Length: 242
Image (cartoon, rainbow, N blue to C red; front, side, top):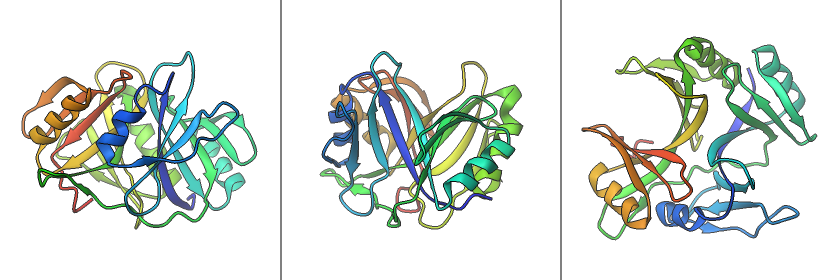
């Protein structure tokens, strides 16, 4: 079992077009830019440690990936490979891998992050929080992929009320949960989910900021597309219990 101490959600985008949108969605601010072309930047939350970042990848489609922050990076990479992952890039302090189903993620060295940010309360009294990464996998790869992520993180599997989902019980203090979704169509990947007090009110706020509604599931969640074209979901889970 890999000693995962923190999880970061990365928003990979061909340009900076969606940065202001996500700052408004989360209530965060931007760190100084990093990288030779300023391609990396962190979303600084109002409280707690950062767990959302942007990466500009010119020519690539908008997508989401996660970084797992670990204590012993070489051992974590060895375990991931033993569970079925393949190494794509090894930069020493950052290793890019592909899961058995084809989901790209990174293993990085933990830098001491430990304080999970709380939900943001908006002017209308509502609260919301980005609190979950959903791993989207084709149906034929679902069981192996759930076993892979559970084995790598050491997080226990928990069935969902809906057969296309399975939860992984995150470690104490982690800012992002993991949910694995069985896809009927489409390729592997990840997307972000938000928890909120009122889905309709939160969705209206996002639409006012530039998002487009893709589909609504009454009483449960709404899928939207951000200004870069990346899909994500707003769910009715309580942000306080996240």
